Amino acid sequence: MIMTSLKNLHRKKMLCCSAFLLVLGIQAQTTPVTFPWDGQSRNVIVHLPPGYNAANSYPLVFNLHGYQSSAQQQMLYSGMNGTADTYNFIVAYPDGLNNQWNSGWTGVYGSGTDDIGFIDAFIDYMDQHFSIDLDRVYACGMSNGGYQVNRMACELSHRIAAVASVTGLMTDSTHVHCAPQRAVPMMQVHGTADPIVPASGPPLSLSEEETILYWVQENGCDTTANTTTLPDTDPNDGCTATKRVYASCAVGTENWRYIIQNGGHTWPGAISIPAFGNTCKDFDASEHIWFFFSKYSLLGPLSAEEQLSAATMEVYPNPAAGFIYVNGTKGERIQVLGTSGAVLKEVVLSGGKQQLDLSLLKPGIYWLRSETGSSTKIVRL
Image (cartoon, rainbow, N blue to C red; front, side, top):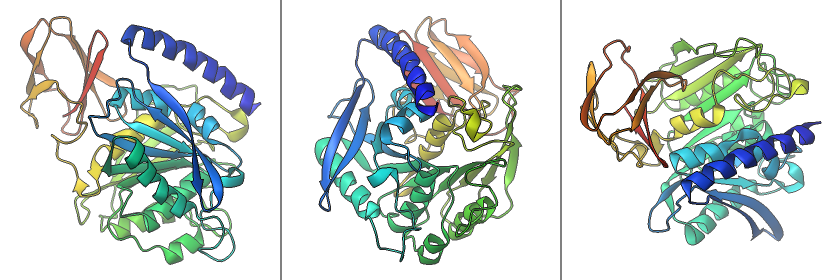
């Protein structure tokens, strides 16, 4: 049933994507890679955004599948290729051996399949064969993949700038042995009604709250979170979402926690799989993961100018108070987005410098998206 749903989703996305690329005129590239590691052939699907140019340097996001799933299924289910195409980054979908990751449950800690060494070596492979920014390598994962990115944050903190776990937690053994070399920003997404990985934590695992609070404390953050209820844009999805931001961290980072009330073992914004519980449709997890990742590099938080380097749209002042000026072309459509992805304001430029009144918006972080013909630009405001 799951595979049938994913295949149908794949056909729909291919039709949509094909139409988009015909307009764009530049093909994105999705390539299977076979990588020899530790006496095994490891398989990875690499997706390059449209217009990939080896003369430029691109962020790299690892997206890890769940237990008994696969790279192909995770690519289709999470829909992250579309996010990568919009925001101009590379995605790598690796396959775990026997469709699983050694996230700390396999016998003595450190024994079994060396998935940490595999990812570490594959970062070098990507650096040799593609144009990636080694300071901007990130990892996200679903379920068992979410457990694995917690372990990666512990053991590959010198290579992974930030991580995000969807329906995954941290094993007890990973917790005991975790020794990151630097603060690793963590984003966590979990449903309160997850039937596979309960928020209270399965045996030999931390709970959802214990997992995020470990990283909050490890990163020297304020344990009091700034809580926001996301707009319930789909009242028929059976769930709502709350975002908690743990800020005031020792090195200027944050940790984001999305609590999906009555949410299941699912990826928000993805195709619904009723057997796994409710799928939250109020936000797109892939997009919010990128919003989170785009704030950081291995060197720490990025400046506003560094974030989303594709931001060639001229916007000032930034930071702003009450209004901004946008220099653009006639017919260029500008949208102001909240962190939930909701469009808060939209204008079509008449050309040249144009003032946008933002006085009704509350202080905070927003995103400006510009669309003109085949070009899309994003600016963090």
